[in-house]
Structure formats: structure tokens, C-alpha cells
Image (cartoon, rainbow, N blue to C red; front, top):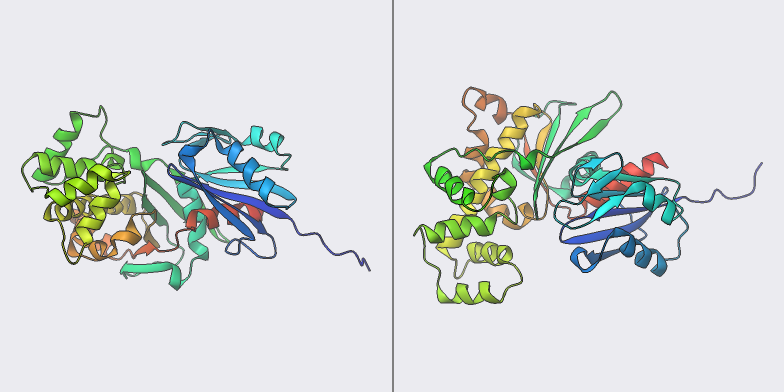
Length: 337
């Protein structure tokens, strides 16, 4: 009998986004929802991922075997140009630089999708219960800094997560107001995608469009807040949801945002036949739950003509766990150790 204890293998996992980078170390015994240590870094304050990894590993004494990262951008041959950062991440270069046995790069939505089978009731908020099909495909739409999309399919013994760049497909207006919005955006952008509307970067443009077209006035207090804020999106969201002193203009902007998000969630649900459900991830949905529970989201999600009955049977959930992408990256890496 071998009296030597089995040495635990440690995995470095990360969620690499345009705003922040979250790194953590996991063990095989603890699993993907139990990080041993973790830290968050402002992405824009660093020249690249390698510098953050070096700092993180230097501060934590673990013999890391491999690494797995969910990254906001298309991964091709284990290399990715980060969509909203001037970073290029090469898995093979990181493998050599840090002496890892392997480095896995996943699209960030593939990471979120990978986490979904591990999520429990406390991690989710149901917007529409539907009638889910066992082992049916699952769609994931995640508005954050950008708009990510992904999906899962059943593969015999479990779900397989797939990446997508569906958030960059052409924005398709569904009414006159949205057609005016598209015309407005085309004055600034050669290509107007769903990400240009239903994301953290899109909400300020919606607000500017409504304000500029005379559909609401900006009070002085809001002008001051927007002038001193690091970014307009949190201010617009807060002003729309303020119970005491809401801004009608911000409310209108968020209502239009939610309408487009609902329509695009329904679009992806049809494209992948998401009878297993639709999950809203990213940083924005948990912050705007009251509006997502409103009739605006549901009406636009279900407005699919002859296929409305089909879409009505698809459940819709909001992912409340802010670390879903990290959990998914860790789950993927731990399975491969």
C-alpha cells in the first residue's frame, strides 16, 4: 500500500473582461465553486494578462499545474484578441512563460455557459418559468461591457458549451422608435450590432438619442452627476431605478434597452432551439431585475410571430452569481487536469 498522500493539483482560472480581470486558484478536491484564493484587477491598468498573472502568483504560494481563462473575445487556435481591451492573449506563450502543463482559453460566454449546469436555485432568478425540455439546448445572453452570447447542447453524458459572437450581428429594429435609433447610430458607426444597443457601451447612446430627439429633458442634478462620473451607464441605471427621484429620460432609455435585449434573447432562443432555457448573464441583468420582470422584456421576448408559442415554452432565468464566468473557466480546467 502506498503511504504517500496524493498531491493536490492546483488550477489557475480567470475571468478576463473589458473592465476587470478576476483570478483565482482552485483545487481538484474543492471544485469550481470553492476558490482557495482570488483577486480582482482593473483590466485597463495593466498592459496585458501576463503581468496580472505574475503579480497574482507572486502573492500566493501555490504550485499551479495548469490555467484556464474565460476571455471576452473570439478564441482561435488558443489565441484571442480581447474585444474591449488592447490585449492579445496567446495560450502557448503563457504556457511557456509560467511553465504550465496547459493553458485553456475559452470565450467568456463559453465560460458562463460551462457554469450553468453547476448553478443552483440561489444563483438564479426566474423571469419566465416556461416548460423546459430535458436535455434541450440552452441559450446564454450576457449584457455587460459588451454583449456576449453562447449556448449549450446535450452530448450524451452532459452539456457541451459553445462560444459565439452573436452579439455582433446586425441590430434589427422592430418598431418606428428603434428604426429612428438605428438611423441615429449609423451616423456614428459603420456597423450597428446588437452590442451597440444592448450593452454597457450601448446604453449611453440610447440615452443620447432620446435626449437629442426631444423625448425627455435632463435635469440639472443629472447633468452634474453625468459630468463627474467615470462612466455614464451606472448613472443612467441608478437614475432610472431611483424610487425617490427617478429620471423619466433614464427610465425611457432603460425601457428601450430592455425591449431590444428581450427581442435579441428571443432571437437566440429560436436560433439554437433553446427548449432547455434561456439564461441572462453579465453584469447588467442582476442590477435591472425590476425592469426585466416588467412586461417590456417578456413582450419583446415572445414577439416571434408564428413561433411565439414555441418561445413561450422556453424558461428564462437571470444568473445572479457574479462569478459564473470564473466558475465555468475553473470547471473546464479542472475537468481537464
